Length: 178
Image (cartoon, rainbow, N blue to C red; front, side, top):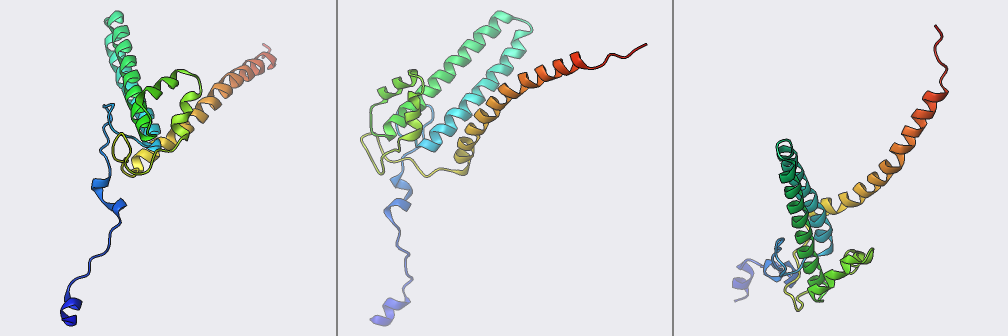
C-alpha cells in the first residue's frame, strides 16, 4: 500500500489567495465592485487622457466647419470624463469598505488624496471580493501620473523664465553698425 501512494503524482498545495475565483471582476464603467489604489490612479489618469485626446481630435475636425458643434462635443467629452471619474471613485470607496457617497469629498481641494493614501480592505468586504493583483500596465499608468505633474510644473516655471531671459538678452545685445 505504501508503494502505491508513492507512485501517485503529488499536488502542489495552493493558498486561497492564488485562486482566481477569490478576486472580483474589474468593471471600469460601473459603480459596482472594487478597484485598488494603483488601478484607480492609473485608470483615472489613462481614461481621462484617452477621452480628452478623442474629444480634442473630434473637436478639431468638427471645429473647422462648425465651431458651435465643436463646443458641444467638448462639453460632452468633459461630462464623460467627470462620469468616469465618479464611477472609479465610487469603486475605490467600496474598496475601502465605505459607501460610494464618499466620492463627494472629491469636491474638496486635496481631500481626494484620501483615495490615493488609504489602503483597501483585504479579502471580501461588504461590496464584493477584493480586486485582482495589479498588472504591469496599471502600475506603469500609475507611475506616469507623478511624472506628468512634475514635468508640467517644471515646464510652467522654465518656459516663461526662458522667454524672459531671451527677451532681456536680445535687448542688451549690441546692435550691428552699418
